[in-house]
Length: 425
Image (cartoon, rainbow, N blue to C red; front, side):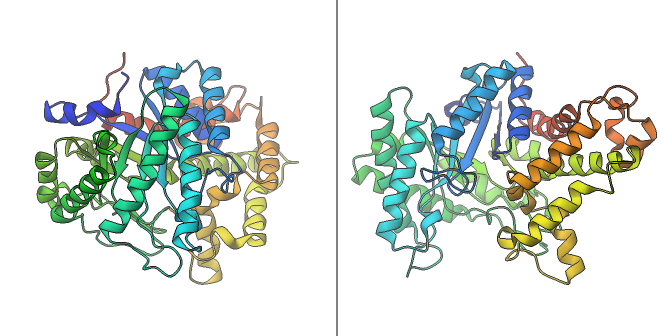
């Protein structure tokens, strides 16, 4: 069933809580799995890109918003997924990628980025100007954040009117987990206080009205709050619905809104279902999907090592280790400990910072070699039982490695789909 974001609050109020999975990844396998799953289920495919990942200057993926939108829509066509089911979102759109610059300079870049996103067809916009720029506190107060968010909303409104089509819907809110998860072992995460959430809404509403953006604020559908979920390098803090009774009261006072839950990775089906039922129908997931993709790639790497005499001993693993040691910038500030501890974190940390390396030429060459080595091979059942037991249905038949990878990502997506309570058309 297709789910419209502006219907989520109404469905919750009517006693039919329905959710949507927000796939936050630029990996082609993850995107293809999401689009194929959406086509099969006839359900909305919400794909989001972050400000660091994709922006008007290319981001760390090298893609502009138009590049990313074109990639998603090309894959949708290849998978037979109707365009009406595909919704593009921009996450944390604000000055964050340019925080090392003065605020005015960073905001000027953020304005260009927001315009590029909306002109490329992104219609779900998370406005996040909460992080301080050069010379400012790390976290800004609600008033400063709201004024900058309104400034970016004005740009989004103008861009949408310029290109035509639907006007954007907005998500506001500043209390978000660290992007990509925490760097340390976690024991407990406190949910956002109801008073803080209400203040955020009130300040934004007043600021938008003063800027002549009342209609835009009327299309604000979501508030980002901390529901008490998180994952770090080592562990996961799962949702405890008993701790958010006061936070849920915000949605009674502000029926325009639902909550958006970040860092829902690794929660599992029961906590995800509880989140949707409790007013968090927008479930954002990213690192989990690339984590299970890496899990499947490494399993196939081990299978090929055991099956094929000329393949070598886990050459994909070796290639990724060499690449991350040569280019440590994406993990060295996040992984700590002995050399042995950092080695396993590089590959198996739940924050999955290895995901930043899959687009490199070295990684793509190693994955290509793996897939070419196994394509058409008949893998004995015991090897699947040893390295990827749940994939035993792929045994004893000509193997298509890409289908194994998509199948593994889809298993995680299916948990989200079930939690969202969306019936198939």
